[in-house]
Length: 281
Image 1 (cartoon, helix red, strand yellow):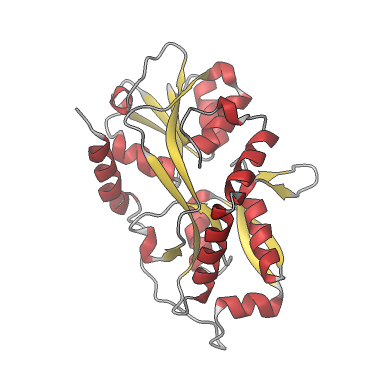
Image 2: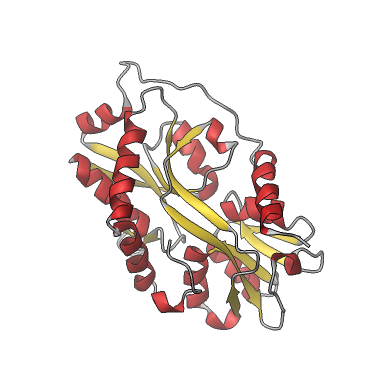
């Protein structure tokens, strides 16, 4: 019988292999030797990235082009605390680490830490504690993760995400259906290309809320939490990461992070009472 400890160990050990394409890069200062926090304050601009179709973290207004969502609220508040503007660029989960490495952005919200990612970017303390869930097609009986770990079960996930790592480590025997975005996973389920979608609860609740008839949202046992953090580029001066950790500590202790999460979910039609019991972010 597979226990929670077994699954967690498999995920932690396997994440190094799953993310093996990443390579460690030495910390670099800019040509003036200026640290990132001082540069952000001097230029009056903090650069971050957002992912299309990754509600409730990020939501893009297709008509107006503006961004909203829990992580957008966080980024804007962090920038406001520094007295600077928040500049947002489009990204993909799979390219966020490279965006940090290449100095395209200063910070990335809702980034899940893995040992291999930790070689090339730095991670903050906990932003939210997510939980892996599954949306299973009608008629498919699932109560534990092992029920999905079978060749005849087709599991959809978005490439380069924490869902990707989880499926490859925890469900090695399933038939994998890799797609580009969280929205694409639901389309795979709707069109019969997949029997199940694996996502963290924050994203899964929105996807399921949009198409409740596509299947059932469940939390297979054992319950596996997914720590979600803030990523920053590697640099020798710790002040930027220290500032973010202090901001997170204050925002979590005051319940502001939780408030942003539930407000973003509500904007997508997801009520807090519809979430599985025991989930609090």
